Length: 183
View 1 (tube, one colour):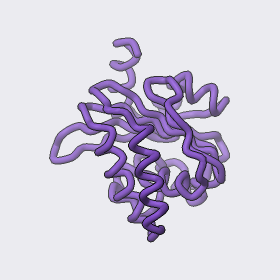
View 2: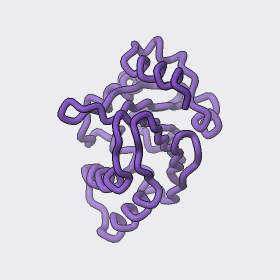
View 3: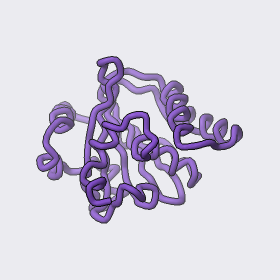
């Protein structure tokens, strides 16, 4: 990604939604979800450190209370270096917040995420595309990295950010704000 786009995206992460609504989706979102628009964005910090900026891309008919039934894309642009295996482990921990699943499922999901999630550096983007009831497609800096074909995984993975049980309710509000008001 070029420096101009990174600078623009960083500035837009804190811009009013009216300004963000005019932002064009990244190429992978445009090809996977034609007509998708930015619904909301927010920043995740931990102990004051910038972890990533998140942007949620959806179609106009998106409903927050049924997020798992809509095609959507969640774009994360990292603010620091992180190891892929740690991203996978933390993702599984967050998925557990939505209720139990079998140990076998968890082990299978963790192995798939460890294989799919790369180490990231500041400025890298991971975009997850939800194909409801079907799969999660993972793009890294615009290139397809893998697809996890498991409907339950897909629902729980995007639930990390979008389910009411999220550990980051303010980020959820920033991503879903306009859609929460309609729900």
